[in-house]
Length: 167
Image (cartoon, rainbow, N blue to C red; front, side, top):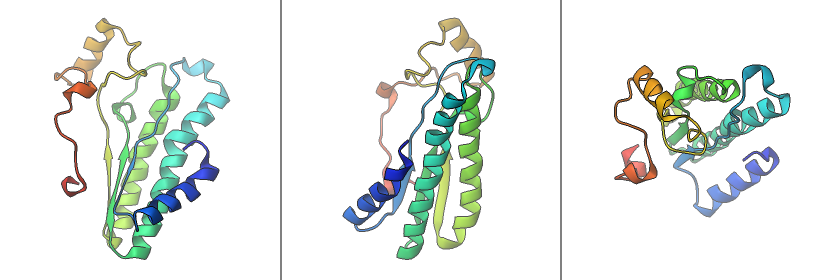
């Protein structure tokens, strides 16, 4: 999705292939773990391009198609716990995920008259390459800070996949 020039044609092709669009799930994100003072502008731009701009544009393309179809629909965006509270070494990622939350709220208000629901999911800690460098001690501190007593998520903990009817 970083290649925004390819995003519009790819979305249009997918919508056409499936004869429209009922649901879109924006699940894209990158991060660089680095101190705020050391963030190069290229990293800031890359994070914002994928985590915010591409999410914005795909949501816009989906909403336009849903409105033309007259069928309403659902747009789900993935954010992060980092969009709700700070975390060191991830200033650009934190800002981008907070942006996804506010973008989703704005879209929800504006698209509701068309029968389009917009929701955002902000998962807690999941063992991904982004969070693996966090030490076991730090994990406990963060778990307590975010009142997350269920432990870190893994792909193995998922018991059920949601269907469009669940949304």
